[in-house]
Image (cartoon, rainbow, N blue to C red; front, top):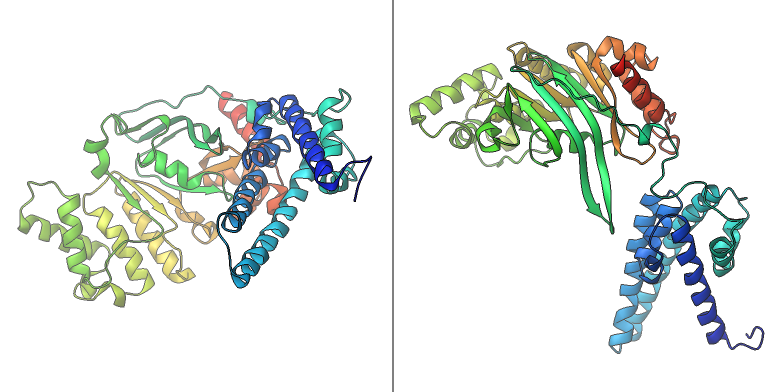
Length: 437
């Protein structure tokens, strides 16, 4: 094939150069560094940013890297026909997936530039044409830049810090960030709350809203730009002193199946209790905790022989040994039926009634919502950053969101493409207005 007297190879080179030149200009229009267009893989990620499709751009960057990797063996070595065919087929499969994600990014780019969907076809088959037109002509301008926000909520910060008191938990989290795919990414921002002693708190939010990141920031496992104060002591500044005052029960336990319940708790006691505890004192505390959690009859049973409910109670008992003021649990009812889950949460309620603070993530909140005092609702704003959409009493949350169930509340803040109502920004702003009174 030849076009305008050009050989196929020369035409391909000209098309590639034109595409990169167009991308350079598009990146600059979107507020990014133009030279990212020259970096393989990174240019796909940045194109995703321009299209407000960061997750898809991230996937494209990985797929492009894999496709490059698939070609290296054939360039560096003489491959046998079977291996060469296998790599070609694998490359083809990855290429098909790549095209699917490209279509998503091009759809987003069309929306950002306010153009008709038909442009997606041009982007897919002769990408250098729209790249040059949109990049070099002034009439083609993005409706917003990468660093600009399409919603008031994402650009709004309350500036209202929670009061630090001698008792209870105060969280003033300004931001939690990571460096991801060539840029700074905000995971959480502007989260401020005070939780009273004796309160059991439900932590809600859709996928990616930052629930686990939030509890990790609170317990100090992932430090954020934040002030976290428990009973008057700054947990970040005094982490070694405070770590035993926090009980954290992850979704997956790390117990050895070949140990007995008693041995598991005795080993945990050596780590969780002060070094000046005698063996007799550790044993007494273990027996006390087994009694609290109904594990005494199973003291000699191997961990592998425990029921799901017993195993969950053992995980909590291990953290309870040091008598912490703050308990954080990530889906403690995972894998349990309704009856066992209810029993577990009733036990947590009794612990809270002893003056402890308990924060729980659960994907089935409505079956136990009556046992909680407060609810934290995290939502993703227009920049997909976890923000505080509500914190307060459970009953008031229903009125605030206009929903009767906790699951309906989560659905209201989830993005539309996730099956939700896409009202996260609305409630983030509404809660801020309530706070400012």
